[in-house]
Length: 313
Image (cartoon, rainbow, N blue to C red; front, top):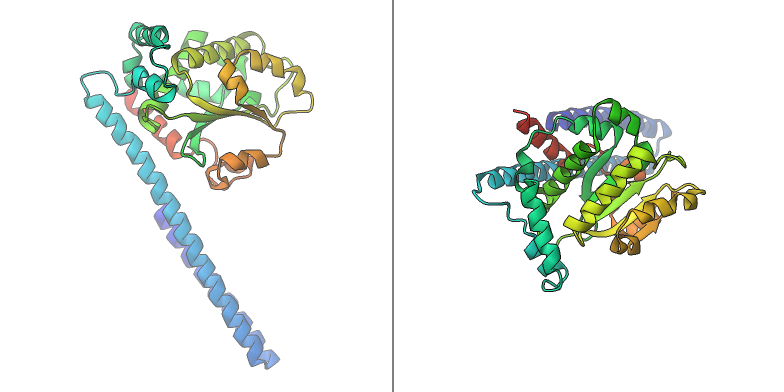
């Protein structure tokens, strides 16, 4: 990628030199020193702007690669542990809610659930349906908000449950996939026990009957798992690109969410001004008016795909 940037920069420099030559000739033809001086100043500003942009791109690439390798390193360190990953529900409940005593039964339920379903080893399980699920139910980890919280995008309007079923994806397979992604988030992307996330649900293209049958069942069960076994982890949820008639479907979505998530819910149309208050546009993909990379190409997504590749053996 670096070589490509260098090549483009060289091309840009040649273009600028040719432009400078043409403009200087024009200045001589006009016989105006003042014009020539202004053109030289404009060229200097142009070169300065190009250099600044190149430095910004290189810095962004370095930070992205640094984050990618950090996530891979965390995975390798987790694999070396002889015990369960350091992400502990007890620590989380104590730090995040401050009511460990009151959450005793819930804590016991979480630990029992993790043991029964072998959750502590899920990050090393092969995920043969990973790409299939991502194709018919697009969802991505992408960047951070202004306070450093991870951001999750779920493209509800593009869910094609029939395609998933045709490819052999069952509800259990899908839920296992969701748990894998959650464990990757809280053990690798951001293992801080008191950290939270922001969820963005894009309903562009959704139909009145989109969340029915198989699609509705997986949405409801996934929401229940998040509420029961990852409590308090969602700081705020945005529903974006909501059509004018979305109030008809909204109760279906809200009923699948836990009370705390409902309280944090914000519904937006195609105006993302409110979203920018929480997430800097440089962390937002172009699909939502930002200047980050496209969905699916973040360092988080690159890292999780690398883990999937390694797990496949």
